[in-house]
Every structure is written in structure tokens, then in C-alpha cells.
Image 1: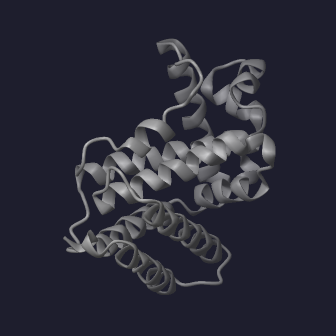
Image 2 (image 1 turned 90 degrees about the vertical axis):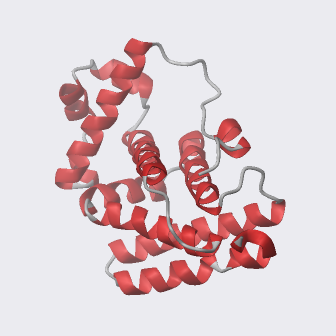
Image 3 (image 1 turned 135 degrees about the vertical axis):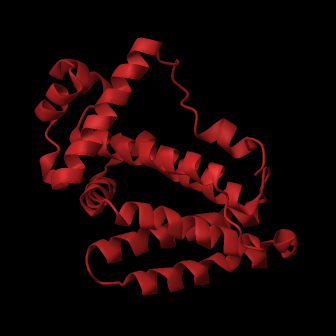
Length: 210
């Protein structure tokens, strides 16, 4: 796998001042509580008061970290993707071409979400409901997904054409997740769609298969 890419360095790290160790620990408890509640009962089960109680923080403190449930669940999705990224780096995809590696990576991520359907549904609903106030959190989700795809491609400095292809792949993956969650697509159809869109990679870079 490549070293940390330029895209990762400038996109995934927050621009706000870094949290203290105590603040980071508190934030992680909040995200863990959010994921646990969503896993058990989906979007409606994530109530801010219950999250505060489960994470042992004051309700007012919770709202300082996350102004709404939508902010919280979108941040939870970014956290879940970050965890997936770490798992993928420990066991990189084995495809011969960049397109094959990206398709394998996205299907592994999809299957991880498939194992927690209530959590997946809650996070996707939050992304759907997100308005402009949640743009920073939504951007973090998109950027984390971009980094995962670029890592699978083996790219540190993608061209504009490659980044455009990555965006289309991201949109397709997100749409496939929505259609699967709503019961309108099977896992087999999702796999076909992901593999099809990943072929864009070879069209934007003839050397990507090396």
C-alpha cells in the first residue's frame, strides 16, 4: 500500500485545532454510543439524551460536539469508514488491476455495512437528511471514501480525470447502498454495478493496471 497520500493529508484531517486527549476520548465514547444505539434500532433509536447517558457526558456537552442527531450520525459514518480503512490496510485487496482492487475494496466495505443493517440505514438516512449545516461532516465522509479508493488504486497524486472517476464511483457506491437498504437491489446486482463503474479507472489511466 502507498504511504499516506497527498489527498489524505489535506482532506481527512480536520482544519480545526486538534482535540486534547481527554476531548478525543470523550468524542470516541460519543461515537461509540451512537453506533451501538443505531445498531440496535436504526435512526430512530439514536436519541441525543440516550447518547449522552451512554457516553457519560452532559447533554449540553454532547451538543457542543454534535449540534444534531444528523451531525452525529454522519460523523459516525466517517468514523466507521476510517475503521474500515484501517482494516483494509492490514489486508489489502489482491486484484491485478486498479479497477479490480477498488471493486474488491468497495464490496468489502459494503459487506461490513451489510453485517450491521440498522447502523447502515441510520447513517445513510442521516446523509440523506443532511442540509448545508452538516456540509463539513458530509465532506469528511466523501473525502474518507476518496482516500479508501485511492489507496486501493495505489495512487498518491491523482489526476483531475482520475478524481472525477473516483467521484462517479463514490456516487454509484452510495446509490447502490441506498437501493440495497430499500430492498430494491440484491447483493449480486450491487456487485455488478460496482464492478461496472470501477472500469472507469482504466479509461482515465491506461497505466493503472500495472
